[in-house]
Every structure is written in structure tokens, then in C-alpha cells.
Length: 353
Ligand code: NAD
Ligand code: IPM
Ligand code: MN
Image (cartoon, rainbow, N blue to C red; front, side):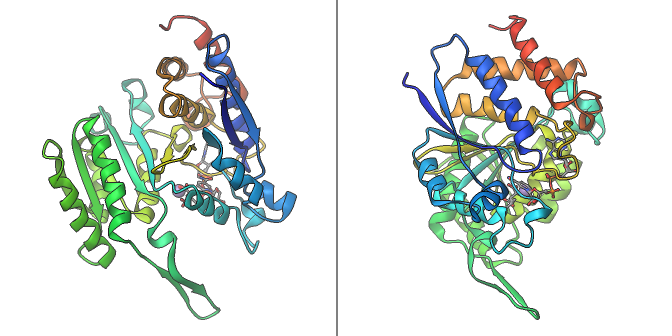
């Protein structure tokens, strides 16, 4: 296999701390294998504003388009909140420029982690679902948008084709899982949601083997904490998906362990934890690196078909968690670096095939 080019955005806040962990694990797991790669670190987000006054410099987007995969930790922070273009604006522009319309956010509660959940064991046991969040349209991108002292406008927009492609992505994914889709919307009120549901119904016809539920977003928020095991694949508009994915993350015990992948029709996929730059704990060395380590694993399996290497990482993470060698958000006392070392030690124990 040719040498793969991985573009790396170190990010802001805890970003560089967890990215170092992810890259250490990547180097360790690939050492001595025929998977070879080079990393290219590019300025992005708050870091890029500091360096060149712009969160998504031209060179960054141009290089990202030529990558085989993109790794991002997290961007943003109070320091840049008043900037004319914030780090978050750069992230939205990046997703849009790369055409990354489908964002997959898994929620899995392993038996060994049931006690970490804020939910009762009998409710959360067996939870294993993914949110497919539409990522490049909806309320985040609709025009017009404006703000004056007295009023502000956002526009929630969806076209039929934007909805159809993310529905197809979600139904395809369901076919490789438990063949159940939940289409989430607010079609009792919003026009975009009426179209969301209509297109969902039309796409569902093409997948007779997939069972489908239609749910309002408010009731879904409730069901995620009341009965999470009913879900397999949820297909959700951009803004609602952002909110429900943080809620879903928390039922695993911590958002600090959730990776994601973002995909378009063509071009490189991007991999990022779903959480932010955690300014409240940045610089303390206690950020949970597991989100980033699992993000690296997801990249290995989904962009590079290195399923065996991904499995080695996942099993080492699982073992590390079972041993309680974890950061404070998981109830442990270890630092980011110590957890990362434990994961690498577990990989070296060689108990994995
Ligand atoms: P956040 O996700 O950064 O933090 C929420 C809570 O989760 C905090 O208490 C934080 O300490 C904790 N947390 C998050 N990741 C953790 C980890 N790996 N280990 C341990 N604890 C962790 O959300 P926020 O505070 O609302 O946002 C902070 C900044 O991040 C904002 O600027 C926001 O816009 C940005 N953000 C960026 C992304 C991204 O880059 N994809 C995603 C979400 C938020
Ligand atoms: C996420 C974040 C972003 C979003 C922000 C930082 C723009 O919350 O990735 O979930 O809302 O998509
Ligand atoms: Mn979010």
C-alpha cells in the first residue's frame, strides 16, 4: 500500500493534548506493519487565527482536499469568541468545502462500562446505536442569516437532494447493522422537517428489509434516556443531531470517549471526537484521550481498511477501561499521558490476534 497522507489539525484547548495521544497510539500500532503514513500538521481554528488571522487558511483547505484522511481534535475557546470569524466558523466552512454531509456518532455502552452510566443498568445495558447527523445544511448554513442589535435571523433550509443523500447513507449503514432506522424530525411544526420525513419515507421504500420508525425530536430526546436500546441508526437534521449526540454521549458516562467520522460522496473523510476543546480542563493534562484514540481507530478501519489494527486499539482501550486506568471524567485518577501509556502497554501485551 502507498504511503498515506494524514492531515492533522491539532486544535485548541485540550486539542493538542489528546491529538498527541492519538498519534502516539497510531505510531505504536502501525510500527512494523506494512501500513505507512505521513502526517501533515496544518493551522486551523483558534491556532490559525493566532498565526494568520483566519480560522481556515486557503492552504489548509487546499491541502486537506488532497489528504487520504483528516484527523481533527477540537477547536474553539473563549479567547476567540469575539473574533469576526471564530474557530467554529472555520469548522463549518471546512465541513462544507469538503462536502462532508454525513456525520456518524456512535453510542455504545459495553457491559464493563454500565456502572459509569448515569442511567440505571437495566435501562442502559446493551445500548449500541449510531446517530447519522446531516452536517452541511439545515439551520447551520441556511441563508439569509443576520444579526443586528434588535433582531437576528437564521434560516433552516433543506433541499430534497440534501435530505436524500443522507437518508441513503443512513439506510446503507443500517443494512450492515441491525436493520432498523429511526427518522427524527419536528414535522409537526417545521416545513424542513415535513420534507425530511417525506423523503425519508420515499427512501425507506427502497430498503424493504429495514424497519423504520418516525419520531419527533423532543420525544427522541426523552427516549434516549428512557429506552436507549431500541435504537440502531437514527437519521437526524444538523442542529437536532448536534444536540442529541451530546445527550447520547453522556449516557455512556462521558463525552470524552466518543469518536466520529464525517463522509461525503467523494474525497477524504474527516475523523474527530464529538466533544469540544474543553477549556475548563485545558492545560491540566487530565483530558480523556480515549475519544481521540478511538477516532484514530475509526480512521484506520473506515479510510484505510486496517480492521485488524483498529481492533487492536479498541481491545486495548476496552482493557484499559476495565482495569480502571482512566481519567477523572471516568472516575479515575490518571493523566492523559498515563492513560495513553496504559493503552499502548495493553497493545504490547500481545494478547490480541
Ligand atoms: P466541550 O465538549 O468542550 O465540553 C463540555 C464538557 O465536557 C466540559 O466539562 C469538558 O471538560 C468535558 N469534556 C469534553 N471533552 C472531554 C475530554 N476529552 N475529557 C474529559 N472531559 C471532557 O463543550 P463546550 O465547553 O460547550 O465547548 C468548548 C469549546 O469547544 C467551544 O468553543 C465550542 O464551540 C467548541 N466545540 C468544538 C467542537 C469541535 O471542534 N468539533 C465540538 C464541540 C464544541
Ligand atoms: C460539534 C460542535 C460543532 C457543531 C461546533 C463547534 C460548530 O458542537 O461538532 O458537535 O455544532 O457542529
Ligand atoms: Mn456539538
